[in-house]
Length: 198
Ligand code: SAH
Ligand code: MG
Image: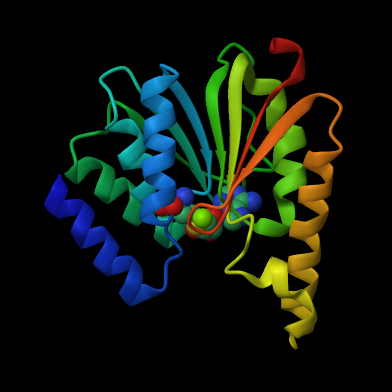
């Protein structure tokens, strides 16, 4: 498994797959352990790297992970199998905005790590599947530092993407239902929990 993880890191670097930074996944794994997280939903599997690490934290951690890109989905399936985690990780090949989850399962952790411009949409869609004591963690809140340095961005597309992330940050800061803490770890993480559970 350790070797497979290293191999995935190499693959990601070679093929430019944006897998999570080590410090960020370490933070999430610690959270899973400390809060006894069991059911995990991930939006954006890529090659299965973060799903595999989250599922490996403890025996009773289960991950449903959604990926819309077919090549990456296939790669994720392959990696999950190679790590012997196919009973603990369910990889779904679909656009996360089109997925119909069973209303019966509530997740202790929802990890949003897909198209950054859609963060608010993912959050609004999937909050209904979050357990009362659950948490929504979002990756790439700093977006490689661009969020702090928007004026310096020349590309219009990139500037618009960064604006979307800023809007998401405002959405979280002003949210009536959720309380959010922002962490300057890796590429920036936000950690949101229901307000009424305090
Ligand atoms: N969580 C992974 C990295 C995910 S990269 C890890 O850290 O190992 C983001 C992935 O989200 C990409 O593979 C992209 O194809 C996928 N994605 C983007 N928008 C999506 C959507 N609407 N539905 C499903 N997957 C999406
Ligand atoms: Mg990420």
